Image (cartoon, rainbow over all chains, first blue to last red; front, side):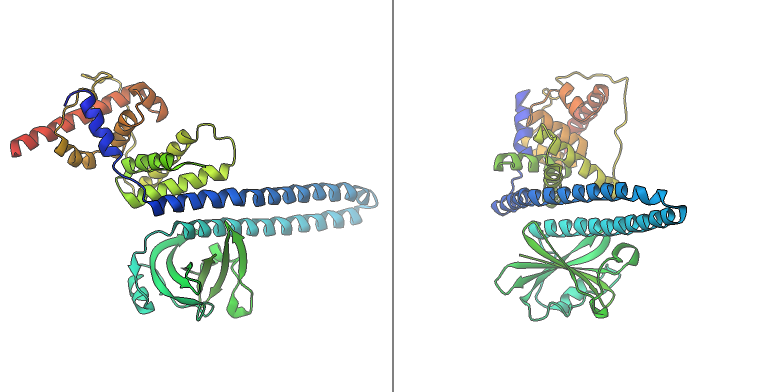
Length: 223
Length: 155
């Protein structure tokens, strides 16, 4: 049991853990989803660079205005600054959405084990007692699924959240996330009770909808 | 894209660090995502992914306030590069000892036994001074020997 004996013992114990077929398949799906998403990202990058070019062009065209008079030049500069500022806000918001949507899609693909398995919503509400809100059934989900499967704790943009899994009408998993609405994190999420339309994005071959309702932020991820 | 063997090996490395299936799978998924998001510029994918997994695990430990930075020991005694080869342990006891080892100790043993790196290579891969690593091996040896002795007394 000397020398290479210890090495082979360690090798044996360190390679005992194995990914199951399902886990391997889930990792391959994740990799495939990323490779499918890459061309889309390139298109976005191109459009962004086009945007930058057109911005540069606009700036060049505004030069003559500055020479026509201080007032006109100042007004043009202010207008340009406002457009630039609004543009950066919109870009920032879209960037926030893209990050959240990508994370939600990845989590859906992983299909992590459920911590509570139940079809009864009351049991879900009892289980999630460490959140600072009580999970509710969204009006946008009723009659659109075959039923609840269970849930687990998770987070959206660092806000503690409940992750609930449903079975869709065509037997595919639907993941629904719920988090307490915090204005400094979720001010960009539309309020459906105020008549706003949910944000809908596609990422990694999935459709992700985001909205707020009754003081909670909801995200629904499905194929 | 990684094949099944590469994924298994990454999972085993992550498992050696955290000794927990769910955490290991989670870390592999996060590292793979991070690597794919980079699109290009990753030359040695395996090394990059192991480093990512290691960083993710350290972050997790930091969040749980369980991370102990590795201290530097310049003057270490009774150590040599073949210290690991000379360890003797009862096979049944090893399983018990393995789970009791620190994260960095399991990582060291994994890199030595599975990836077959030398102590010098391990020091370079995990960016730890060679002296620190040798001191770690020394302490680990002593602990394994103590466990062995205690087991013999109890048995």
